[in-house]
Amino acid sequence: AKELGRNTFQFYSRELGEEAMRRVDLETRLRVAIQNGRLSLAYQPKVSLKSGAIVGCEALVRWHDPELGHIAPDRFIPVAEESGLIISIGDWVLRAACAQARAWLDKGLRPICVAVNVSARQLLQQDFAVVVLRCLAETGLPPELLEIELTETLIASDTERAAETFGCLSASGVKLSIDDFGTGYSSLSYLQNFRVDTLKIDKSFIAKMLSDSGNAAIVRAAISLGHNLQFKVLAEGVETLEQCRFLAEIGCDEVQGYFFSKPVPSTEFEALLSMRDAQ
Ligand code: C2E
Ligand code: CA
Ligand code: CA
Ligand code: CA
Image 1 (cartoon, rainbow, N blue to C red):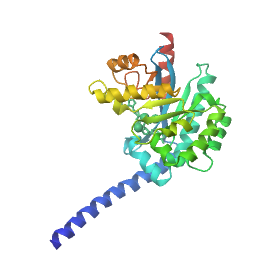
Image 2 (cartoon, rainbow, N blue to C red; image 1 turned 90 degrees about the vertical axis):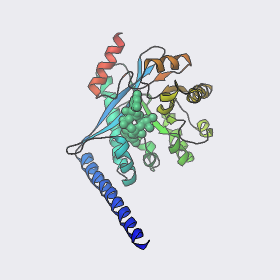
Image 3 (tube, protein in one colour; image 1 turned 180 degrees about the vertical axis):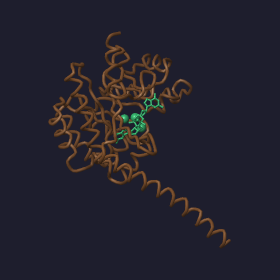
Image 4 (cartoon, rainbow, N blue to C red; image 1 turned 180 degrees about the horizontal axis):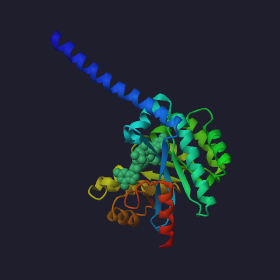
């Protein structure tokens, strides 16, 4: 039994060692990528179900490592959060997204609201509201054209602090959406303390709503909750025409997902915009 115990220990420590090494390696590469400007943004359109027009977009960070290739945000964002690198990534994303939206205005495109994802560590830094307002001032982007996406989990982690920061930002015109709505296991009472623009129903519910009545019920309930609170409601991860039809039928306002477009580079987004506007 003693033998077995030791072997088991060695097995686990070796596994843990490798996992830890991978994380350190990823963190080192990420640090270099930030310094060398190797991050980029992809933009995914948000489409109105009523008009079919693109009403905004979400900026999503992309990282291409010269050796490892494309690394998905779900892999490196947690590493960035743990190591604190999320602060510099977040600053970069915010600035790049605002600068891009401003560049679209300067090119004569119609005003497009750009949404950025914000992590807990970013939001809870002392002067996050100041960082955002300074970024808007420096890029010259009107505050109404910036939207911040926060998850319920994040808001629940320090509701008072989040409400304070957001009070300041919404007063300036910045918009707020609740991301991954329905997955946070949190109480709904926080919704009253925020000037929310849009509830984004998590894609896991959308994926199953046509095959599972429980999921359909959750989607309907989220739409009516959102509307009763005067929020817009957006469905994430819409992949099929059938999903679109059902969402239109039950009164969902906006959709985002591969059915319309995957997240694309800014030039492709511009092309999408003029193509849809011409229709
Ligand atoms: P999220 O904010 O929920 O973003 C939506 C994710 O769903 C994106 O994955 C998007 O590419 C993907 N998606 C869009 N349409 C569809 C669809 O029809 N079907 C399916 N299956 N997926 C779809 P992505 O870009 O890999 O990002 C994953 C997560 O990483 C994001 O989830 C967000 O939590 C985080 N993330 C991405 N960019 C940033 C960033 O700049 N800052 C922070 N803090 N987090 C980010
Ligand atoms: Ca998001
Ligand atoms: Ca989401
Ligand atoms: Ca998500």
